[in-house]
Amino acid sequence: MASAVAQKLIQRAKQAEELIVQLRAQIECVQQAAALSVSKGEEEKLSVENELLKTKIQGLKTKLVMAEIKNGVKQVPIPARQVKIEPTSPPAGDAKKPEPAVSEEKPKASKEAQPKGKQKNQTAANKNPADGDASKAKKPKAEKKAPEVDKPIDISRVDMRVGKIVGVKKHPDADSLYVEDVDLGEGQTRTIVSGLVKHVPIEEMQDRLAIFMCNLKPAKMRGILSQGMIMCASCPEKVEILLPPPGAQIGDRVFAKDYQGEPDELMNPKKKIWETVKPDLLTNDTKVATYKGSPLFIEGKGEVVAPTRANTQIS
Image 1 (spheres, rainbow, N blue to C red):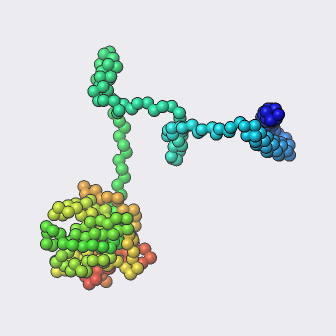
Image 2 (image 1 turned 45 degrees about the vertical axis):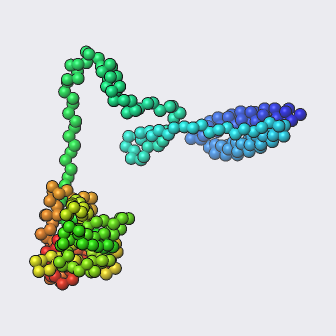
Image 3 (image 1 turned 90 degrees about the vertical axis):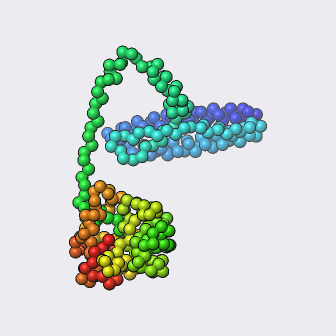
């Protein structure tokens, strides 16, 4: 008896699905005719009927499953197929990342997986002797890239930021050098070597905020790689570390008011950017650090100053 009921339910489900197909076809026809005549009411009616049929089909399927379970038929879930995701190229002009494409093909063995000797033998075997002259033909020259437009050399190319000296010690091989661990808000400290032993006591170096140049090419100083430079007002008589304005925080960027822009990620030593900028970095009469007379400052917090030195070179 249960088996007969199940068969009827299956038959009704198939009939209902056929009706759905017919209704969908009718809906498409109605949608196409909508541009020529007002058929919105009919379309809504068919959509409602479609939803009712879907609900009815789902109910019939549920009854079918229950009847099969009651009749001792075991329900086995269909396992999901394992697929390989392959990237597809985006359409021309689309800057978005490519959507993954689904593929069930087995990956082909890569050429890299084959022994080099075997690859060479295969290449020699596949080479056509008649192609000898063609191989000697000149390859077309690659198109030359347009030369990069270089930015003007000024203080905007220099990345100066507030950092905190979280650790300091004397260089093991140089009496005049400190080795500092500096937090610049990058998630890890940088090692910076400074020649300040004769000018600043080590206890004044520890845990102080200062201005650091961060995009110099790293260079070894007596065997230790230095990843930046502390900015000071410097003259033969005295060297002073520049002071950030009150309220400055680790990682704050230092700008010159009249020369704002994005700094180089890493200054190219061949372009002599720092050597060109340095002569115009001075403290003014009021001890404010300036570039060509334009004050160095941190947005919303104030100007960078030297403790006592006016009209002094910054380096």
